[in-house]
Image (cartoon, rainbow, N blue to C red; front, side, top):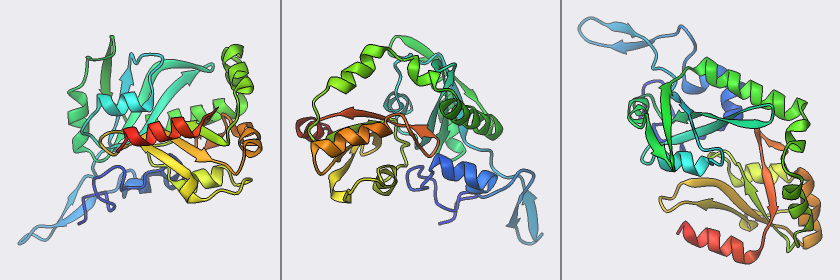
Length: 257
């Protein structure tokens, strides 16, 4: 079935919406370009021009500073989340984020969550625009690549804890785009020999990606060496890596069953 302006269907996960793909393809990702219109056959008068559907993105303000993509997905439970982009300034989270939804009608449902609570904080939800979302992506990419102090600003004890952790050959990844697949993770770790069977993308109880994954390396030496990829980007997202274990992996995977 062809949904107007959305040839891949209304499900955000099935749309294969990688943020980098949206940037690379620009407006054409959602099937139209600025100023374009759709032609519908309406007998007996022939074709009638209709405006394209709006880009389905909302902006959130007042998020908890420890907020994760999973928290946003839970806040918008029942909606199809294509992407969540947290906004940073000077390496610090501003409490704002952009959330791209599966199709335009879901924006109205998202707006009904305005001033509802996430934890102890009430969150404001606003309509937004494609241009604002793309500009925020550009700012995040620029900051992550051009400002090494973003990493330095984090507590040293946090990094030292990672350095001192025992390696068992398993790493946990956090901050993955919801649309990331095993092939994306294999490309991220392309310097290491991996198989898809040893990559585990965790799901919540509804079968949706949590933004985390576990990767089993050939040995502890490889997983330790792979920590050099900590906070490097996958597409336009920087990924955090943590030493983990088979036990933690099994527990996380079982929670999504």
